[in-house]
Image (cartoon, rainbow, N blue to C red; front, top):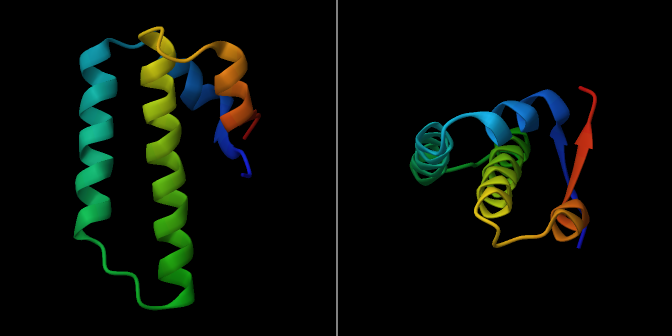
Amino acid sequence: MATITFPLNTFNHFQTCSAEILEEEISRASIRLKLQNPQTAEERLLYQQELDRLSALKYISQLRKGKLSRDDFNQKVTLTAL
């Protein structure tokens, strides 16, 4: 399984914000994905990027709750400077 790339600055924001803000963002991202019906290759790429972002947010939530160790998180998500 390939790791998800995720911006370090976004990680830092969601790692330190209130739990409610993180959960609201997870909920919004999930709803956006449910409303999409990707048809073209470009739409499928954007859908996959949004799905990866949602997965990373969920991993951050698990990390914050102590359900995921930092090592396990690092095996799933690669933090990038961009």
